[in-house]
Figure 1 (spheres, rainbow, N blue to C red):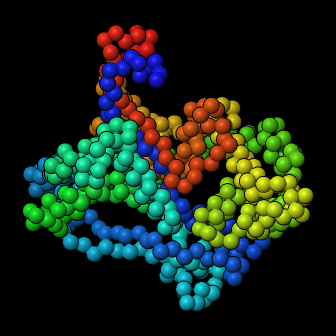
Figure 2 (tube, rainbow, N blue to C red):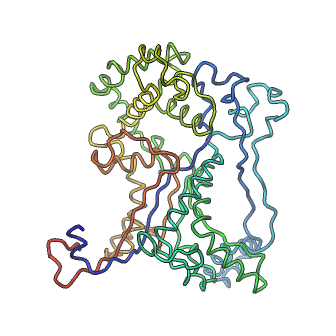
Figure 3 (cartoon, rainbow, N blue to C red):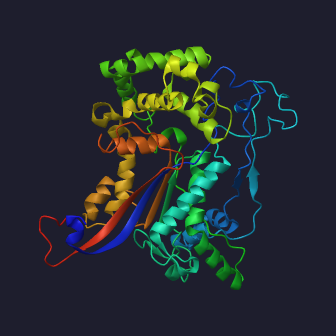
Length: 452
């Protein structure tokens, strides 16, 4: 019941941009989190994954077009190539990617430390785990209920607005006209396994019921060997901008050093009583403060261990030590939560320092991408837009960015301290939705309320 709603006759949802953090994963590096973390008789010393990646090459028809002779190429329209490249025609082997070449399940100690996988198992660093798979399925269901109308699965009234009416989309079976084809869908990820797969799982859930209906249509027409192909746009990992990247913007390193050298940072995270307690906790209970002095490592150690139901050290295991009188007398109550909160605020301090200057610089290229996808829907001058974005993409209904915790933290921090104050860490599979509406105002709407 806001002044805006009181003056609006109709809202039409035009576009949604969704930014997600990948789902639960393995550690991003071979940390030595606490004293017995990598002892061979402890479950944190080895990570075994049942979730794997499946791969296959591009369709044969598309490949044959790429290798036509120059004279023949001129006779092929770009549109035809584009459609063929997305159609997934032909039968393929699917290839399952397994990180087990330097690891033996039966003899896990067979390979020496300088050869065995970093996580001493069949998981790669930062790999999505089954719990992360389930989290992204949930995200897909949430988005379905928010934005999809489809009587076949009893989605008669989307909770937010109708972005896709799958009852109508069922009839659109031609490549480039389907809801999950470009330009209707834009899918962006960096080249990490966990972000790529997280986005794929979400989209499979979001569009899966419609895909199933289309597949039945193709089967009825004798085209059941065709498979829908969704493009994912990515870049060289060390050049990507989906997370803060000091490699392409050294100014970020300077700002981080400046923030950590500030008087405020030193008082909070080095000289304060809480900082001294955390150092004592690390030295006396965890094998040395140095192991998790880096707050990013500390959060990664605790998050990955907890989410995979592996063994935390006694002092951080709430079920075992919450009421330990000796520990409470020495360090105070709620040790685990205080440990997490201290490291979250220590890590995120850089992002909020000086009104989020680090975050505003770090996310500038990403906001540039996101805004390009929004402004194309508006009455903005197309000539001016193409000067700012030479490769501006066509209008899409749904844009998905599959990224990281630091992506969400810096995007929010760039909008101001009242949006993100650095006290929270985005959980696995966190999600931001940016909605663009066409607004029809009432004829007697207050002029002070209307937007241009």
